[in-house]
Amino acid sequence: MKNLLTNAVVIVATVFLFASSSFAQTNNKLLKNMSEENAGLILPAKFKATMLAENLGKTRHIVITPQGGIYVRLAKPVNNKGTLFLQESKGKAVVKNGFGNYGGTGIYIKDGYLYSSSNQEVFRYKLNSKSEVINPDAPEKIVTGLIERWQHETKSLVLDNDGNVYVNVGAWLNSCQEKDRQRGSMGRIGCPMLDSAGGIWMFKADKLNQTYSDGVRYATGLRNIVGLDWNQQNNQLFVMQHGRDQLHDIFPDLYTVQQSALNPAECMFALKKDDNAGWPYLYYDVAQHKNVLAPEYGGDGKIAADSKYLEPAAAYPAHMAPNGLLFYTGNQFPEKYKNGAFIAFHGSWNRSPEPQAGYFVVFQPFKDGKPFGDWEIFADNFSGSPEKTASGRADRRPCGLAQGPDGSLYVTDDSKGSIYKITYNK
Amino acid sequence: MFKNIGLAGIAVLLAVTSVAQQKKATAKTPPTTATKASIVAGELVYTQFCVSCHLPDGGGVQNMNPPLFKSSWVNGDKSRLVTTVLGGMSQQEIDGERYNNVMPAFMYLTDKQVADVLTYVRNSFGNKKTAVTVADVKPVRAKMPK
Image 1 (tube, rainbow over the protein chains, first blue to last red):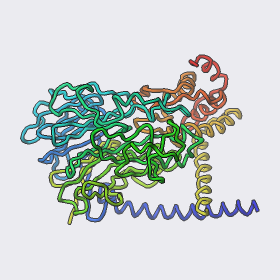
Image 2: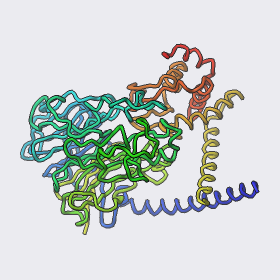
Image 3: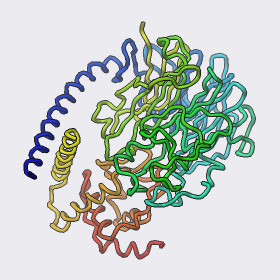
Image 4: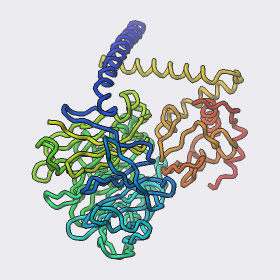
C-alpha cells in the first residue's frame, strides 16, 4: 500500500511537473511576444507603454507638470541630486537638471509649488509659469524633525484643496513588540510610538519650520503608508498600508508558513480626521474578510478585533507592498478608468519560502468615491517573467505613479531607475 | 487532494534539484565529513529560521534584509558572525548598503544549531569558507548580555 502510494505520488508529480513546465514555456513565449512592443510590460488591449528613461537611480514618487515636465524623487541622491527634472522628446525623457542633496520618496505639485520630502523633513520650491523650480538651492522648509529610525523611513506626502499637506510617518517596528520581530515577544502596551509615528500627520502647506507640535495627527494606527492620493471626487485622503510581516516567524504555533504568506491583506483606507486603523492591535484577514486581533495582543488568528477600528475600503493579497496610489482623472483612457485608482505593488518578500507576488500595477474601479467591484492587473511583467515573480528576483519593481496633462500614466521602477509612460490608442 | 500531492512532489523534486546544484557549485575542495554533516543540518535550521528574510537563494531583500553572498560579514570574522546571530542586528550598514529591517536575536538556538547554520551559509550561495564549530559559538555566547 505504501509503495503504491509512493508510486502514485511520483507519477502525479512527474506528470504535473512536465505539464506545468511546458505550459510555462509556451506561456513565457506568448508573454514575451506580447510584451516586446510595450517595453517589456503586459497591458490591456490598445494600451501602449514606452520606457522614457532608465538607470536614473532609485526612482520613487513622480509628478508631471501641466507642461509635461517630469519631477522624480530618488531614494538616495545621485551626484548630490535627490530630485531630477526631465523633459520628454521623441519618446525619451532627458534629465535637464537635478537638485536637493537628500534622498526620499514624497513629491507633489500644488498651487505653484513643488513639495518634496526627505526622510525627516518636508520642503517646498516655488515654480515659475513653466513649472520650473526658481531657486533649487533655497527651498522653504515646511516641516522638520519627523522620526526616522531606518524601518519605514519614507515620508510620502499629498496636499488637499484647503492648504494642508498630509505626511506619512511610518511605524519603526513591525508590530510594536517588546523586541522587534522576535519570536514570541508580545506587544508593547499602548504602543507608545503612536504619538509620533504609525500615522498620517497634517501640517499647513505654507508655514515654515513646523514640528509635531504644530501639526495634527490626522489618522493613526497605520503601520506604514507609501502610496497615497487625494480623491478629488469626494475630497478625501486615501492611503495604501503596508501590512505587518512574519506572523509565522513570530508565532509559529498559531500560523503555518502558508498562512503567514497569505496574510494579512494589504489594505486601502479612506481616511477622515481622527480615524484609527488599528495597527498594531489588529490586522485584516484575507479569507475571513475581517479585522482580527493581532497575536502580539492576545489574538489567535480568529478572534475579532475591537469594532471601534476602521475597516479597510478595499483589501488586496498579502505582502505585495503598495508603493503608489493614483486616482485617474484624465480623459485619454476609456471611461471605466475615470476616477478609479491605479495602485503600484512593489512586490513581496515576506511570502518566502512560498512563491512571491506583486510587481505589477493594479486598477481598482471606483464609483461615487468608493471602491466598486473587483480590482484587476493593469500593467504586469515588471519582474521579467513568472519565475522571477515567484522567486522575488524581479528585474524591475513599480513604485511611483503620476498622470500627465494629456491623461497618460507614468510609472517609476526603483530597481533599475526607469520611468514608463503608458498611453491609450483608440 | 491530487493537486496537493502533485505540488508536494514538485516541491520535493525542486528541493532535490536545488540542493544538487548548490553542491555542484561548492564542491571544488571536498569538505570534511563533519563539515558535510554540519552543512546538511544547517540547511534545516536555515529553512526554519532564516529563509523568510534572507530568502531561499540567500539573496535577501533589496534595502531591507542583507544578502548572504558576497558579504564581508558572512565570509569574515566568525565571532562577529556568531554575535550577529545570537544578538540580532539593527541599523548597521553592510558593505556600504543600508538594510532597514531589524534582525531579531536567536539566543534560543543551541550552539550546534548556530554552528550548523553558519557552516551552511558559509558554504552555500557561492560562499566557500571554513566551518563554524560549537567551539566557536560557546565563548561568544558566554560574553553576550543576558
